[in-house]
Length: 196
Ligand SMILES: CC(C)(COP(=O)(O)OP(=O)(O)OC[C@H]1O[C@@H](n2cnc3c(N)ncnc32)[C@H](O)[C@@H]1OP(=O)(O)O)[C@@H](O)C(=O)NCCC(=O)NCCS
Image (tube, rainbow, N blue to C red; front, top):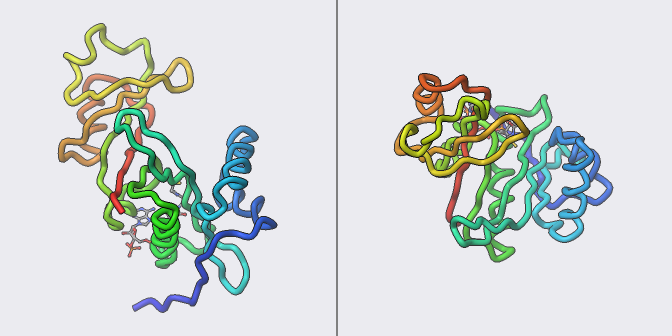
């Protein structure tokens, strides 16, 4: 049985913002500046895991209006432990601390779109969309007729398209396997939802 060290889960110190971005492996300028703005307005949704004062994990996000649900959600953009502290049991309480902050902020639904599916399934999240990335030249003329459970299509970085498919009980891998019979699948993801 593993022994957990006593970590402190609390909003990050402003002086730790750059370190948080590094742990969250998002250093692209556009993403960095967006996160910086969001940190100004929603500092409580930038949760850190501190080991003896040292930031070793980060979960951050902000409010996002999801048009197709007609709902303002707490959107978890990134959760990440530094490389030496993964699969040790600290990511789960970090996620719980972020959920608590979202609840305290008045949100009743969490939305997120990236990461290991097993981590979110273990933590009570429901998969709501599988995203399958294909080259747009391969899209058939009548996609809603050809592709089972297709919800909508969104533009990825040109020339790619994302097919957003209702899971309908399938794992992401099963959806990818199914789509691979029709397309060359370049990437995939799962969006999750959790009611608080
Ligand atoms: C995802 C992440 C934050 C989870 O934190 P963690 O401290 O590793 O998670 P925990 O130890 O609390 O894991 C709890 C359970 O979730 C599942 N899980 C966690 N990470 C997983 C992974 N990469 N693959 C499969 N299952 C995973 C496992 O069931 C795990 O229990 P186990 O280790 O006893 O099998 C961490 O692994 C990480 O930083 N990964 C890289 C960054 C990333 O992918 N972030 C998500 C996208 S923003």
